[in-house]
Amino acid sequence: MEHKEKNIQEAKTYEIKEEQETLAEENQEKEKSPAQKGKVDFYMELVLFFILGVLLGIAIKTIAVKKITIGFDDYKMNIQRQDYDINQLQAKLVNKEVKKDQSENQAKKKDSQSDNNLKK
Image 1 (cartoon, one colour):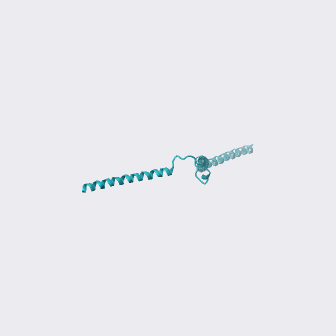
Image 2 (cartoon, rainbow, N blue to C red):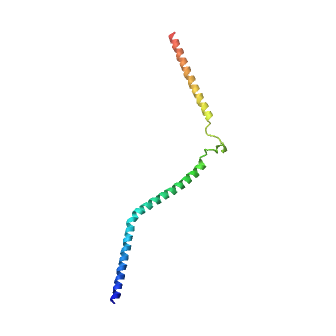
Image 3 (cartoon, rainbow, N blue to C red):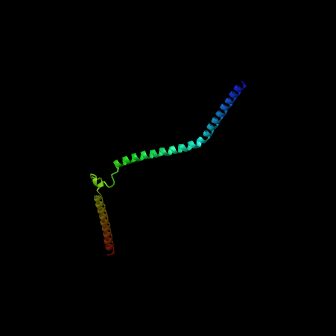
C-alpha cells in the first residue's frame, strides 16, 4: 500500500512539475512576444502600405491614360478646334506694339514741332 501511495505522490509531484514548466515556458513566450509582435506588426504595416501603393499607382495610371494625351501617339490624335490660335495672338501683340510705337513717335514729332515753333 505504501508503495501505491508513493507512486501516487510521485505522479502528482511529476504532474505539478510539468505544469510549472509549461507555465514557465508560457511566461517566457509572453515576455518575448511583445517585441516579436512589434516586429511582425511593423512588417505587416509595410506590406499593407506596399499593396496600397501599388493599387493607388494602378488607379492613377488608369485615370492618367484617359486624361493625358502627350507622348509618341500625338500624331494619331484627332486635331479639333483649338481655343487659342497662337499665330493670331502673336499678330495682335505685334500690331499693338506697332501702334504704340507710332503713337509715341507722333507725340515726339508734335513736341519737337511745338518746341521749334516756340524757338522761332
